[in-house]
Each structure stands twice: as C-alpha cells, then as structure tokens.
Length: 256
Length: 361
Ligand SMILES: Nc1ncnc2c1ncn2[C@@H]1O[C@H](COP(=O)(O)OP(=O)(O)OP(=O)(O)O)[C@@H](O)[C@H]1O
Ligand SMILES: [Mg+2]
Image 1 (tube, rainbow over the protein chains, first blue to last red):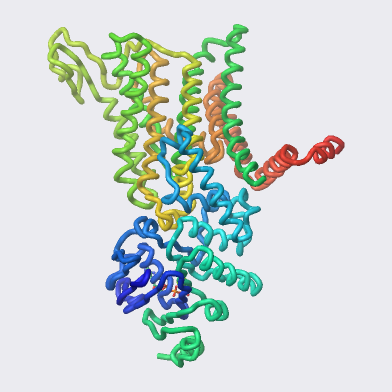
Image 2 (tube, chains in turn red, green):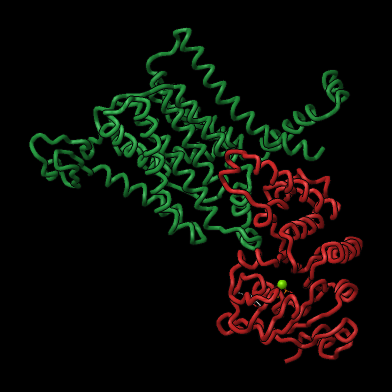
C-alpha cells in the first residue's frame, strides 16, 4: 500500500462542491504535483489532508491508518506537515524558535522540566538547537537564526516555513505554492532544494504550484483539478499534452 | 556565534528583570537603614510588590498568549480571601511560618481552581470571548464575596448570602466573614523581603516557562493559531496553561496584599483594579517583563506622590500615561530605541576596535 491513499475524497461548503471524487496514491519518496486554475480546490484538498477541514465524503489512509476526520494535532503526529499559500510564520519569534516550535511533538519534555531547568531540559534544548540550526543551514538561512521571522525577505520566509514543517520529521510534506512570489532565479534554486529535501530526508512531497516549469521539471506524477473535479492525471508528459488541461489553462474563462 | 547571541538575548531579559527587582529591593533597604522611609511610603511597599506580581502574571495572558483578560483582580481576590480565611481560622493555631506558607498555597490553589473554571469553557473557543467572560467573572465574584457571611460554632461552618443573623448560629458562634465588611482582625504580616522573594520566584517561573517548549507553544499560538495547530500544538492545553498559571500567581499576589492589612474587603478588587493592571502591562510594552515591572512601580507610586497636588493629580497622571505610551508605541520613539539598542548591542558584541572607535567619536 502507498504511503498516502486518497479515495473518492470530497467536501462541500453549503451548496458549493469544492472538491469531489479525488483519488490520489502517493508512494514514499515520491514528488507529486497538484495543479489547476484558481479556485479549483487544491488548497481545500490540503486542508482535508491535514485535518483542518472534515471531508464530507471519501477516505484518507496514511501509512496504513485511516485518518479521515482526524484533527490537525493527530495528523501532524502521524507524519504529515505542510506550508501555507499565504505564509504563516510566527512573526515575532526568532527564526530558530520557529523551527524549534516545529519539533513540538518530536523532542519533548514537560512544563516542569522547563520551569525547573532540569538536566532533561538542557539536553533536549541542546538537541533542538543543533537540529534546528542544521535545518536552517540546509536552506542557506543559518546565519539568520537570531532574526525575527518577520525580518526575513519573502523568499527566505518561504524557506523558513519549509524548515519548520521539516522539523516535525514528516513522512509526507505538503507545499502550497512554494514558488509563489519568487523570481526565476529563486524558483530555480527552490527546485533544487525541494529535490534535495526529498533525496536527503527520504520523504514524499505533494506540492501545489502555478509555475508550470517548476511542476513539470520536478514532479513525477501530477493530478489536475478544475472546479473540484479531477480532469487529468499522469506523468508530466501525459498531463501537459492532455487537451482538457490545455483548455482549462488557456480558455477556461469563456467556457460554459 | 549565532548561538551565542541567542543565549545572550534571553539572558538580557533575565538580567534586566532581576537587576530591576534587586535594585528596587536594595534602594528601599538603604532608605530604610538611613531612616528616611516615611510610614506612608512603607505602607506602599507590599502593595507595590503585589502589583508587580499582578502585572507580570497578566503579561503571561495578554502579552505572551495574546488573549485579553479584564478580570485579573478577581483571581487576586479569590487568592486573598481563601488565603486569609485559612490564616484567620485553621492557621490561627499554627506556628506563624507554617500558617503563612499554607495561606499562600491555599490562595494560589483557590485562584487556580477559578482559573480552570473560567478557562476551560472559554479557551476552547477561538475568538475574543475571554475578555467578556473574565469581565463578568470579576463582577460576579466581587458581588458574591461582598454579600457572603461565614460563621463558625460548635456545629461547624455556617454560610449565608443575606446577613449575619441568617447564619443561624449558637450564641457562642463567631462570625468569620461579614459581607461588605469582609474579613477583619487579620494578624498582619508584611515583610518587604518576602514580597521581593515572591516577585523573584514569579520572574523565574515566567521567564523559564517562556524560554521553554511550552512557552514557545504559547507564543506560537499568539502569532498564528492556524499554523500552531498544523504543527500539532494542542491549543486548549497551552492556552489553559498560560491562563491558569497567571491566575495562580495572581492568587499569591492576593494573599501577599491581604496580609498587609488588618481587614480585607471585596470592593478593592474591582473592575478598576483589573484595568489598572492591564494598563501596566500595555504601558510596559506587551510581552516585556522588565517593562511591566517598571510600569507597575511607577503607576502605583505616582498617584500617591501626586496626592499633594490634588487639583492636578489626575492631569499629571494622564500625561505620564501618554508619555509612556508614546515611548512604547510612537514609530519615531520605537526607531530611536531600536537604534540605541543596536548601538548598545554592537558595542558589546563587537570587536574592541569598534569600542575604541566609539570612544573617539
Ligand atoms: N471554508 C470555506 N468555506 C466556503 N468555501 C470555501 C472554503 N474554503 C474554500 N472554499 C471555496 O472552495 C473553492 C476552492 O478553493 P481553494 O482555496 O481550494 O482553491 P485553490 O485551488 O487553492 O485556488 P488558488 O490557486 O487560487 O489558491 C473556492 O471556490 C473557495 O471559495
Ligand atoms: Mg490555494
């Protein structure tokens, strides 16, 4: 069985069927793309996978366990981490602390250990500091560890969000438009980093992206959504030659 | 290098806070020794200590958790009444030291229980319900305590919310709490050093908490609760942790405050007091512990100093409030402060060359 199995997943908000009949199967170590025009339901799919929304139909199986309807806390512990389309960092906290918060359920000690500064506290904090610094170094922002997160330029904030997600040792990483707002150089660099993360950390990555060069260049398998429905699925070659996909991306505005 | 700076940043907050409190203690002790401390000023010492504890603890909720509480005085009141009630009854037969320690523990526990009662239903919701509920809680507790009569006779304790006679006691019974008159005949215990010790413990608790895993979870919730949830942080648990800890400290402050006077009435812990403490937190710069300490001292001492100028008292008080607010918030001031901080920091962390350069300049 694949790491993530999504069967007939759907959700409706009042009358609006935002996602319907979504099927995906993501193997460990895979790079998978989820694309589609604005409002297609991509972020909504992420919100269901991470427990932010409860699906109205379908089943999500992760690592052999049915996680449908489970909350974000459970799902994070199970090993799914995400980033957000509109960056959501802990702005007033330091860059290093942002990553350390990401380890919340991985490196733990009690409140009392913290207040009494026990040996356990000191050991675990040292472990966290080291691990966080290493992650920041991978993304080339290790020298910014003491800055407030809000002080970083946009591109580095996106990287920090990925670091924070990786800090929870996920088996599956969900990236919601990681290249949004980046220039071509930064995008190119990010592509290499994403590939490197997959290789070095050995995890599966599911990403939403509007930048076609990015998606086609990096993903091994792609699902295309339009108005909540899956209109195409396959490898980059197949998907980019699909007439329905071409229509959705080129002439989607005036069709009825 | 980066790691070193990080440590020194947290250390700076510890250092400033403890220097402030130590300095306050040293200065007062010095004045005491020289015999220059008026009895009026001496009477203010314990209240100032209690308010410093109140400001630090409210900062935990308002500054670090980012929730608005408008009833912090109520937790102080709960602690004060529970602690003093014990001290005056069961504690009366005990050695003083034991009675006092137990009074503090009971006061803190009582306030903490109220913290749980208020916090559990409210903090599960997202949104600004806490302000409304704490406001209501403060009024309810004040009114209940204000009309509560407790008496004791050979049959045990008697309670009434009407009057003394409704207690239905034997003629030999003793009234322990008399409604609006509260609790009287308290054996006063007001030792300034104990106040300072309690502040120091509060500081150590709050600073250690905020620099630990739990504290990071609390600040993360404040900065972005959706992201915090996605990371697997249990929002209710950490909100409650901050809120109840804050209530317990307020309870300790209440006991400290109450033992300083011969009588204790519920009226003192009203809405005005809650707002005053909130003002201390806001003026001190939300989330700043040293700021809260300074604001608590200034805002407690200032109105007393100004009593001589009764006509202009509130006027001057308002001006000081505005100036402190400007200093904390106005962009020009904030930038100036950041520049000074930067200069100060680079001067300390930088090479000797930089230092030498500065001396010349
Ligand atoms: N909580 C919600 N309540 C009501 N409607 C919602 C909610 N969340 C999403 N929707 C609707 O679902 C549809 C899909 O939105 P979604 O954000 O998933 O699009 P998307 O594919 O991520 O688009 P984009 O590329 O613009 O980010 C939209 O019509 C949106 O308005
Ligand atoms: Mg989206």
